[in-house]
Length: 82
Image (cartoon, rainbow, N blue to C red; front, side, top):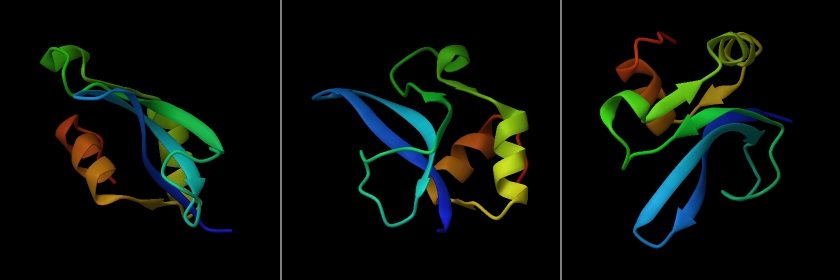
């Protein structure tokens, strides 16, 4: 199984929010997750948009989890280097 760190969509039409999760790469976007690492609210104020567990994210990346481009951009924007 190859794991991926990516976004899982929640919310309503035109009011999305996302959870940053670890999933099997082959599963559907809103499928079963292995672990939830944080959340991303694009509509909130800048300081409340992103919250994630940096320690657990680092562990997953070190163990070979593939980070999606969108999640990589979000984490880099908030000073978490991969």
